[in-house]
Image (cartoon, each protein chain N blue to C red):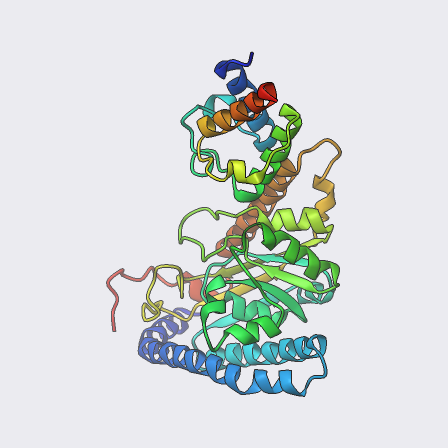
Length: 86
Length: 287
């Protein structure tokens, strides 16, 4: 239903908007803290935005081990899969 | 203003007093290193004991802390270790402001705690692990940095109680010669608390007690501090409708970084005295 590419495009758009990042810098392997200068307070904003986007309850713990953009995409896909399973 | 002979005299005196400044700096460090724990075991517990409640104790301890810091700066100045000039101090007196300062040297916090009436302060988490200093920082109502997501709400609470809060948004001393790198926590606090932001630019005209340098690396002449309290910034101007918090925090942080950079440049470009016209010192100067 949601391809990896679609999710990535959505995540990229959210990251670009929330953190004023040039989209070309937002690559799957980009590290959130070191490459994209996203700090722990930004992470809270990001989680709130993803909650909005997926329409799912998001627990901060689900994002505890997120380090790269790819991790965000994976976390979002997991959320969406839970939705289809439910 | 100064004749050539006067200039040469100044130059010579600077070189001669370098050894005594090294001794004085060492002495100041020893006094600070021993005096801090000593006061923490005597004066501060005493003030806590004789105060009826936490709030009174906090006020008294803050007042005492201010005097001690002022005494320490006076001591360093009297030993001829530094000179300073202060601008716009009256702006620090308004309560409930978020006071943000850049952080070039080890003694910035000493200056700021002396100059600011009743302010909370975000300080190194390591102080909470120090058996002597742990209780005074708690009694003074200071906040440990790196407290994760608890840090911003703690800061907001202090500001909303009407106290000012002192923060060094660089988190640690500046890297000499590099552009300032500000964390965005201070801006987040300003946006969440609706407090005004009062920027304080600290400039030391020579590398002195900088990050990564040893205290005994004494500058060739007496360093001069210029501390300038800027105009308050209304943080809410950045929280426009539809602007995500993360974006507003970025804009406010960039504004502060630009303010500090301008302030530092302005001071470094305009010589404070004729001493600045001295010929450059050889790098290997040693005494």
